[in-house]
Image 1: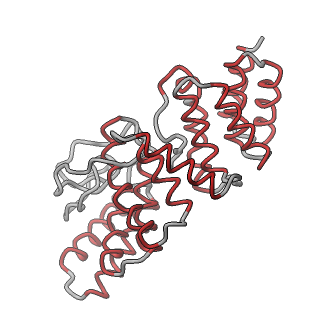
Image 2: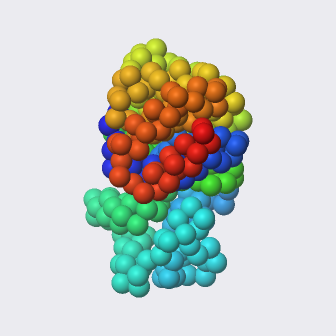
Length: 304
């Protein structure tokens, strides 16, 4: 899988967290796991706002504060996106659309507003808000693609989650919506892969592994499944298995940046220093990102 726009958003955070990952602070699914991008317990306050910091329920109608939250919220910018604030004009625009959506009675017009809101929230990286509005469309026009569009936005939010509570909260929603995708098309491997990662943040992680293995059984060259299984092996301290997964991944696509980086990480943990050095240098050659270069240089120092 070539690096996509969505996955490139995750790379900086993934690579910056590499040391913590190896130390056991791995956050699913960065990966995703990204991230876009696990899924499983969305029973909390269904009236809470559907933004990246407050959960996955219906957004409140009303003015937004300087951080893009409903007026009266005390959340502010988050650890997930500390820089994420909205200028006043953008806040007002979204608030007006939310109010119109809540008041609209014509279904066609309401769906049009839902699409606009999904696009606005996605543009400011409030992915679960975007997912909420896309879900409203899918509820009226159910189908594989409409459910997947909603599920993918929740998965994006899930992939940025920095707490276990957030992972479980958003993971639950992903399980629900990807389940609807697979009910329409059991062979949608991307949905099955994301669903597998969602289960990793649930009380049934074995189900997640099973789904990822099913994906590889159907498509042995599936980069996303290989990548996620590799990261899960790192998380569990199975560095030999991780190296095997990332080696397979880089054989499928030598330009997979994350695959090369984590191949280096896993090889270093097995003591294969020369191979690890080659993988790290390959990763560094793929991207000019200074954060990546800094992460690689730090790992290379450990190999000396």
